[in-house]
Image 1 (tube, one colour):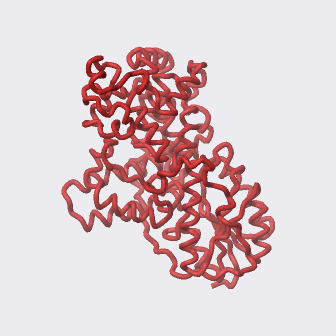
Image 2 (cartoon, rainbow, N blue to C red):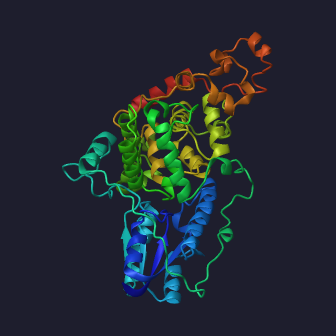
Image 3 (spheres, rainbow, N blue to C red):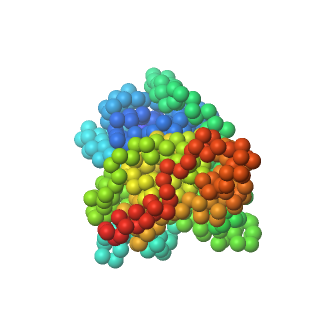
Length: 482
């Protein structure tokens, strides 16, 4: 082993297991200094939102605890210039090598290229690795070398190339760090919100690598068996809810595939392969999101398809946008989803598609407004997934025939919230309504409203839009540019 010192730069890979940059650094150097640099200005305009900052705070605490248990510690630095911070830390520690795992957001790619060139110019070796994706975005292309724009052929190509899986164990011991290397406290980053709207988060989420491992084990032992069907029902725990753990790199897609295959081999439940295949396909959608972001970096702000650059969005939409954000549209499934988002930092995936459809198609509010709100309120706010999801639903992104897809929240409620459990949980104001009227309370006879002691427009708002009329309007506007 080289008796030199290396810096391990943690970013969105906050784990010790299956971390290629960490593995290589420990194998190649006698001393390794783990550092996390909080420089939100370098991620603009997509620095962490309020909900994901809460998650980051607790994930850093978890990582630091794991390092302490192994004889090391996480060095925390904060500033506006990661290059300057790395240079200074290199001087303080006599580090000659810096290791990190790659990021794929446009601002981070640009920054990392610059940092790599600047460090090498000063004879500091840099080494970067893939720990986030199954394949690098440039590895999967069509026969003519161009990138895919439709998911199904993309995922078919990924599967044919082989899905990597890995479960390298976390190191048992780390080299001790000199007391001369100082660290800021995690609290000094001021990641926690000043208004404690996030209080319910701690009862739902357990950020950190251990939380991710516990979460996937619970999912595979329970919901995975019925995933194909239950993932569409917001009234049951039918999804993995691993998205925030994946975003912060507390678990890798390779680990998820490895653990899923292990579970299949050990447990021979009927239908397990069929259900887990659908689950792994969702990992494929995440992969596709990063793939598109890499090849089409402007899609964070602009539609993938140029023909949408002049789409006739509404101009004066502030009231409808606010009603949507606060869960006060008068459309129960929409309001339930938006309240779930506010109180938990998460929303069921099917409901995400439905609330996005109503915003962009029924309300004709630009998809960018929805993307910004999700970015600030989701604990799993991920630039690639957020961009893909909003453009897919708005019909301006990677999809074969998107313009006529307009989700009807009433029909979706009747189909996927069969007993109204989800709506009643998040909208107690109308919980007494019979299922027949729960999904569209505006159709409830006055006599039944009186029996239930509910006054529409007072206890719960009347709908801010007419679903039928706005659907017809959207179809007309979309058909012009289809």
